[in-house]
Every structure is written in C-alpha cells, then in structure tokens.
Length: 140
Image (tube, rainbow, N blue to C red):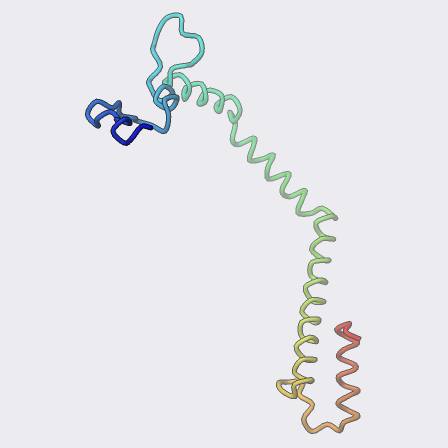
C-alpha cells in the first residue's frame, strides 16, 4: 500500500505552466507562419481588404438603392393588406379596451366599490346589473 510519500508530485518550479484551457488552445492562438507554401489561411491584412472590395461591389450605388427602398416603402404603405391589418388592429384595440372595462366594472359591482358600485340599488336591480355584466364578459 502506497502512502502519501509514494505519490510525490512535481514541484511547482519544474511543472509546466498552462497558458490556456488546454494544449489545443495554445496551438490555435499562436500566430500563423508566413511561408510561401502556406495554403490554409490568409494573412489578416488581406481579409479586410477583400471584404471592403466586396462591399463596394454590392453597394456601389447608394442613390439607386435609396430610390428602390423608397419605392418599396411607398408601395407597402399604400397596400390593401397593410390597410386591412391596421383596421383590424384598431378594432381589436377597442374591443379589448371594452372587455377590460367590463371585467373591472363587474368586479366593482360584485364588491360594491368603484364606478360600477351597486350601492343604492335594490336587490333585483343589483342581480340584473351583475347578470348583464357577466353576459358582456362571457362569464355566464
């Protein structure tokens, strides 16, 4: 049986120091060698120049592109689809506001507080009013 004396570790002075998480990380972060036969990677100075020349080719006439985009925008803004969607959106907004008002009015009527309070109503009027609010909110 080995004791602690049998498991001697290397001293901190002689142990190799790690620079990254693993040995692969140190190899990947080292600078690529510039050799005549190196085919796999491009030097970093060439990559931005190639990207810049590509962007010049793709976006060579910003005035023409602005005209096209303005035309597309105006065509979309005047389209029937957009008009229909905006109309539906307005109707849904009004409907949702009304549903929320009815919901809180029903709650106030049941609790006897707020604008829809049933204080001062007879029992029959209270029941009829709450029943009508429940019909509006879909709870009945």
